[in-house]
Figure 1: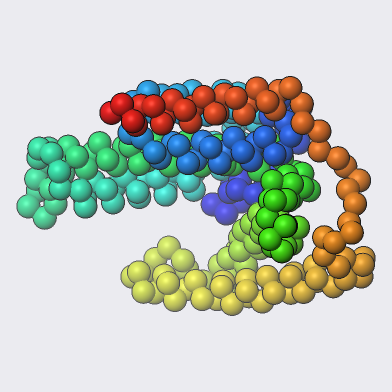
Figure 2: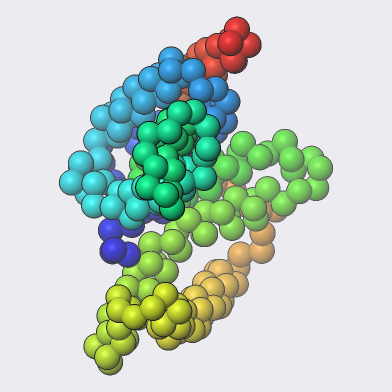
Amino acid sequence: MFDNVIIGQFVPRESVIHRLDPRSKLIAVMLFVIFLFASRHPAVLISGGLLTITAFALANIPLRFYMKGMRFIAIIILFTFILHLIMTNEGTVLWDTGWMTVYTGGVSTGALIGFRLLLLIVMTTLLTLSTTPVDLTDGMERLMQPLAKMKIPTHELALMMSIALRFIPTLLEETSKIAKAQMARGANFSQGSLWHRLKAIVPILIPLFVQAFKRAEDLATAMEARGYAGGKGRTKYRQLVWKRQDTLVISVFVLFSLMTIILQWIG
């Protein structure tokens, strides 16, 4: 399961999405995430779905690779749907077993939240799949540049976020290796009560934390050895260039945001 998680990974491809400026991708994803949850109107959901499908098609990410990575995400979405199905008590009764009652409001709310969550995850993962960690760091730093006038360390913040995203696949790979090593020693993570399964995870968490701190220390040592001393006075080898297609992408997502505001105001 951990081998198929795609969050934080980068897939080098020749596509329109890969060639976009990271700033335009970051702004587009932020607008999409904010306004996707601002309205329940069907037009907003349909438009959000069409934007997500179009972005995925233009990114040229292999479908089989992406579907493997969505297995873990599908469990989260299914859990969210079931949670709303059980806890929402609105509308008419669809099913009553005595110990659980399912209402129409629970089905509609669960489906709505699940669909929004699916679009959110697909769009955000496309950002990391189509943008290198270096470009992502530069894009975040440039977008947060106005905050530097308020003495906020924008370079360090962007670097920390980029490193956190980069270490997600590494930590998941390390978790998979530790779990397989423990299973080879007789550990069982799929049988027994919930308490026994939670206790079985402890032999994974302890070496995982040890390895994580060791990797962080090695990274800090390597950065110090290369003379890293923060963002002050640093220059960029690769310059970000805003192109016409970046303006077009931002225009599309601004129109999506305006449509959401108008529909919310009318409705």
